[in-house]
Length: 435
Ligand code: GAL
Image (cartoon, rainbow, N blue to C red; front, side, top):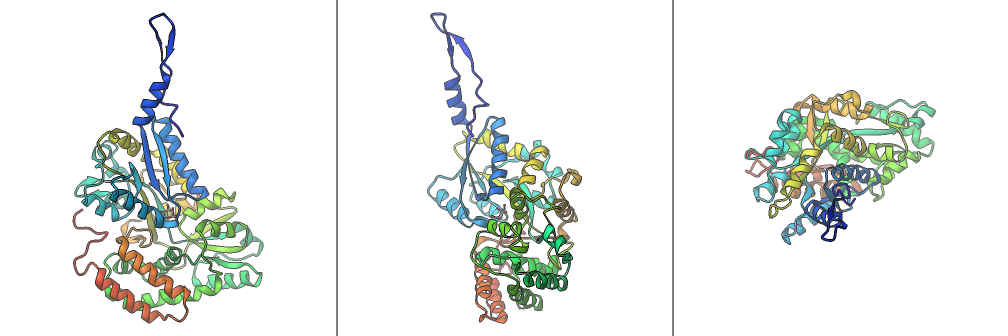
């Protein structure tokens, strides 16, 4: 992805009348001045394609995307690397940083303000308000939202369902009927990994299904201890345990689950719609080879994760390149091209949803219903800061792998966590008063 496009060959006459080509030095200067290293966690086949697409768009603009991808679903490794690079005084020019963390890094004065770009491109008017607010800190724009993922998505192998004449499950009763039939045929009903973040991703979807967005926010954004001793939390925990009988959970990276569904080893998968892009990259067409519905109980809701890039302040030499990148990423054509490959939907509300596939259209429309129907993903860093998220994920994982741990005990532990790390005692969180 070297930026040859930016370097035109120039000929000039030397002293003795011979023509000299000066493109080589122009190339070096341009490449040095215009290289941006980008730290992110997109390493699966489809994620790579989406990142490469962005790199190509940048190359056409005379910028080089120098890739610093750190493997690990949900950014478990990337965020650690970002912290240590920053502590070592070597932050990248650009990094994937999402949710309230943008505020925290902004408060430390580490991020470049993108106000000129945001104003010039009318982001405030064109972006979904939730996406816009996420990148605001003290009236400054500190990030570039790229795409909105829907997490409460139930994928199913459509061809398999058709062949077996299985109905698409719209509630848990139907889900169980379908699961029983799949299991009777030796197919794992629900693909699931025991990786902590993947278990917790399923769990937060179940919490949304049991309690709706308001209750979900009480638990994961306001972190009210009462929400954890509530009956709805008990039901979500019970559902998680009951679902185990339809799975064969082993610790696997999430792209392998998409492969299981593609190969018909598993019939269904609950996962953010980055899995849609992975299924596409395995050759399955959305709405044909596979399709999707909202997870039972979450039909009208949108459990979201908004991928966002931030720019780090440096000595100023990279600033114009960083601003160019920011401007480009929100352009309508780039938004459509990137999100199609990534599985998410554009952050712009001025796009025609007819341009989207059937799953993306449903996601975009659900999100467009507004904040009352939206819930920020805890696991994907939209609801709360890292420490609280990690502590909840650990508790849920423990409950999931060990059937001896009972739900009431988990509820007590989570309530204690909420008391210790919660916002009722004055802590900071997604609804930051600084905004
Ligand atoms: C999410 C992220 C997605 C996808 C997923 C799996 O946190 O928003 O873009 O990469 O993790 O790693």
